[in-house]
Amino acid sequence: MNTSGTSTFNLDLTELTEEAFERCGKELRSGYDLRTARRSLNLLTIEWANKGINLWTIEQGQIPININAGQISYPLPVDTIDLLDSVIRTGTGQNQVDINISRISESDYSTIPTKNAYGRPIQMWIDRQSGNVNATASTTLTASCTATDTTLYVASTDNLPSQGYINIGSETILYQNVGTSLTSNANQLLNCFRGVNGTTAAAHSSGDSVYRNYLPSVNIWPTGNPGTQYVLVYYRMRRMQDAGTGVNGQDIPFRLIPAVVAGLAHKLSAKLEGVDPQRYLALKADYDQAWQDAQDEDREKAAWRLVPRNMFYYR
Image (cartoon, rainbow, N blue to C red):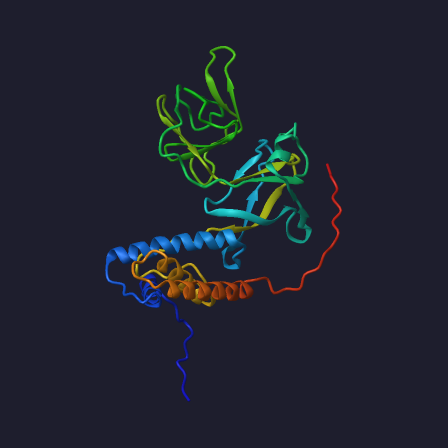
């Protein structure tokens, strides 16, 4: 018997929505129907991210540690949910060594008195921000600056944290302290690192708007040993991509399509008019089973073991 010879079945957004509507006993008829289904689907993917690790959204990344400038914070991709595993890498080729770096809480990091200390990085705090940029300006520049200035003068620091990221024009800037000039009493952003997160450092004029950038980031301690090259290698869980237009496929592996359809049908049955309560309960049961099947499949299959870990501090 001849078979198709293909294994590429998938559903675009319109087909996925049609299937979900049909399970609700309804028919997809209007652009609004597609729009409300897309909104429910985006909420469903956020719900999945909150429920646990989705293996297909795990990606590896790395950050070279800027050991000569005392940088303590490094931006992560804006769609980062969390870091799952991280190591500090030294050397290259046959001399490459990966060394554990421990994750600590915000409260533990805040109590470190010497955040700019030199030494091999052994601890990190992950600041899980949203990745959004404020729509309204937090302050304005009160003096022009060149592309290399590391101190910026602003009208106020009231709406900015003591350390963080800002946008001026198309440039993203990391500042590591705020302060006040002893001579002019001017508000300052200090120890600035210019053109971070893939942007280009540029000159700016007095009066330019300053926007707070809520970049997710990782703060390391100590900051590194001068003369030694360090790389932070991490595995991150990213957000699932938004539902697109009707012809777009979804950011999920094929094995989870049944769970997505079941989940969307359940979400739609809660807000569509005329859906029988018994059908709603049945769709919820279908979704719960499909989700459990998906979770059982989307897991690490390797054997695991518990190994005691000894932590040492090297200088």
